[in-house]
Image (tube, rainbow, N blue to C red; front, side, top):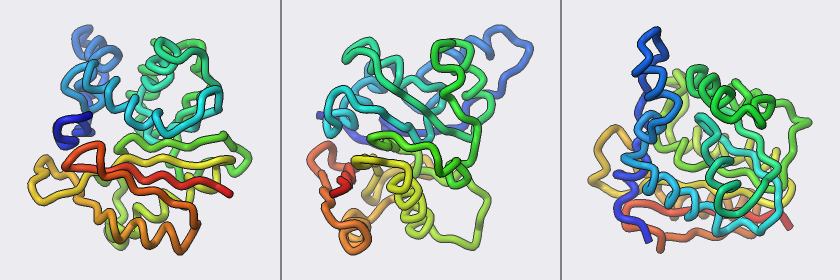
Amino acid sequence: MLDKIKKIIKKEEPKKKSDNIDDISYLENSSEAVGYDNREIQWNVYRTVLQYIPEQVSILDFGCGRGDLYSMHKSEYGDVDYMGVDFNEPLITAGKKIYPDISDKLILSDWSKLSRDIIKDWCVNVGSNNLRYDTNLNIDNFTYTCKTLEVMYRHAKDGIVALFTSGTNLGNGLISHDGGKLFNWAQNKFGNVILDHSIAEDGFCLIIKKI
């Protein structure tokens, strides 16, 4: 379905917003600004994640960037009750401008500090754990990922989907996640876990359904 996830989810730091109109346009419109080579690849990644989610459900997007998942869902599947959280201020600001209908649904925050009152049917994380953006050097990658999954589970009514990179030749600073280790941890913690390694040779989806 997908080529290599390392080409799909780069999650590089976007250019900073400046007075230069070209930089502003890049931040607001470019797929590269949110880590993808082009819009086609970006949309394909979103389709990969959305295939596990039933229709007509609400979505909380962890590491939402500009909120492009909302735009893709609306154009291909119809309206959706969507909310996104990200602590990248330039991208959240860009999203509020280009998607004014969800400007109040794009939250600038560390997702670990998200209000516990925010609950959606499904929580998704489209590769935002494939690079570390936090500055906590006292926590390893596996523990950080587990903590993220715990937060997602807390804010989900029905389930969560997270897309991860894995393998030995990722490059670009991408984290190689151990699918078996994550599966065993999630199975012991939550139960009802699916690990889908069929999406690509360099990545997998972890799906956790609430019983």
